Image (cartoon, rainbow, N blue to C red; front, side, top):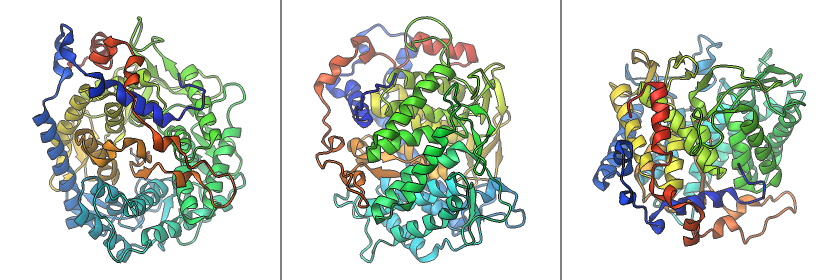
Length: 566
Ligand code: DMJ
């Protein structure tokens, strides 16, 4: 359970990082080991380095192919080696048009991955291409949420990395750079504002036309994550340019959602009407439609330090545990089924569906940030077993029938992301093995002629000709960071946070200050003063220091119930 004290959650992550690292003398040879413990207990250093190189190669195969065959279009078609932009012939094709807007999406989304890879030359080249060739003055109707996390977040991140005086990734600043990426971010965000201005509740319309605002007759139903996951990027932009309108708009939307919680259960639904404030979808869960709403309450608190964000996160997290969690009470002790977070009805709290979705795999990462480590370990282990069963995660998995309900896998990052965060927090080699399985699957199952392709069906492994931009911005980045233990992001992990699209933002004192009111935070910011203490090692039992994160008999329990060989 998350502590209700106002402890800095980032510090919790650091504390856990200290638990399993060299300071605590990780030594798995101390006890007689069973087969699973032997298999997952160590990973040779040369193997880790090979995995790091192979992940780099994976990124560059996708990125170079995008630049060769697709740029300046938004996405790469990795099978037919061509580019893809918005579907102008079919405006109702929201699967494409919500995301692609004729703005070289994949290039922008990949900017900070280039920095993480230490590729200063290509980073600078990419920045120049973006500044010289991309315009948001387009007749494209896109989803505010998608454009926010993929474009706005990427532009802000690249700008802040360029302006970082410590230059941890090298000198990323082109000599001529004069804040153009920030100007682009500001221009883009100003095009989102009609989504708020036109609504009767303060919740944003889900879509805007970048040139003309909210289109006539636009749909008014938005998912909760779409309306309530804007605060991180909007807040950073507001604080950078000194204009409160973005942060205020995002905060207001969150407050509206908060007031719409069910009076009996306190839960939110997954779809709401922005004009009536009525719930259109009454499913409450930790996956699609709601996932980043919770994530951004916590991350907004980590970045900006407003207690109300942490309060809202804690309230919802408590209710998630109360209503959605099934299975044995303690993940790593006792008896009963392996824990599972199910989708429930927001009004009654009763089980609503018998599927879980692949977006829910990110929840373990949120639990790491919240300091709820045993639960994070547990949540992650379930998705690992499903990954092992199919080689990837099906979009929806039916936990009652033990079979997929929705078959595709579009190269999503969520499972990689939580694997990386768990490794950072525990330094347990188990997660390097998981990363190796992920890398092998991606190379064996999704590699196409000129990039990596969406799996159409996990049942027959047929492919679709699409490589979504998050493959380069998140999937490759998290996997690379998992294996590149000395990356500046990992060495300074207490100084960075990832947006929901995997973009890196600094944790900095100035981000806790607002120029538009006097509510300034102390410059002696504990986030920046964090120290890993040897004393942390005493905080957990010896047995937990040396074994697998989830005890092997529990790992075997899930693998047997899903019919998987570990
Ligand atoms: C990404 O755009 C982000 O990770 C978002 O939070 C959820 N959907 C995709 C990846 O699956």
